Length: 63
Image (cartoon, rainbow, N blue to C red; front, side, top):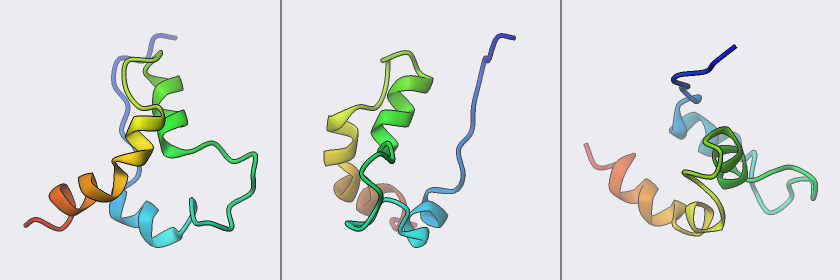
């Protein structure tokens, strides 16, 4: 099977779920970890996670 394109759940829904809150389980991968793995290192990683708040402000609530 070759995956050509993937879509994630709505970013707003993921943020509302508090899945990656401070109380998340230690072994739960971050959004950046998941994206990095799915893209074979082309996207994501620690910088994706650290830029999340700024990126969300600029893209999710900037209608």
